[in-house]
Image (tube, rainbow, N blue to C red):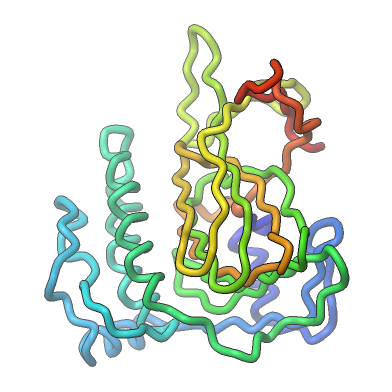
Length: 276
Ligand SMILES: [Fe+2]
């Protein structure tokens, strides 16, 4: 649900705003707290105990990935662990290696389970039904966001163009529904490469999953699997962590219009269109 490109994130990170700015309708951030971890810092963190033993088992050229273990991770350690595998995955990105993305998301999920965000949250008070997100840390090509949602707050249907994500529930509960674009007959789209139906035309998406996440549960999406989602906070609201990995600098989300009614009663397919 990142509606900015990486360039825009970096511009705003430089400013470290204290005053609110609407990043999408109804979503205002009052303070952006970006922790920039440089490459030297990442190397030092790895050398200081987040070593490369206990490989995650992903294949070459992703070999030499993230360490296993159970000890808690700071956000710096989390990023230092993830980044080497992320950069290898992106460098090796080809259609025949798309399964690498699944292995990567599984490894990120195992590490994210060991991370607890700092309190207090550097985020404004949210009004009834609102949600907000705060960029907690950035180590290109990865950005980690803290997300707060008031009870019933909704992050409307959107995609994740050129980036993947791991969303973890830390407090409360959240309903997460994931969808994929139904491929057109005859000319399949390379959705992972950003090929999608054109703006201004309706198309179909199919619901793959509908899950309520509670603390410790998470949801992953890749560039061409579960890439579209709709997120609604439970009755007690929720706090979430989201790890985004960007394959291209122009990566960002695009909202979708829908009427939330399946094509046929009880069905799993919906007609949608990109928001103008
Ligand atoms: Fe999202």
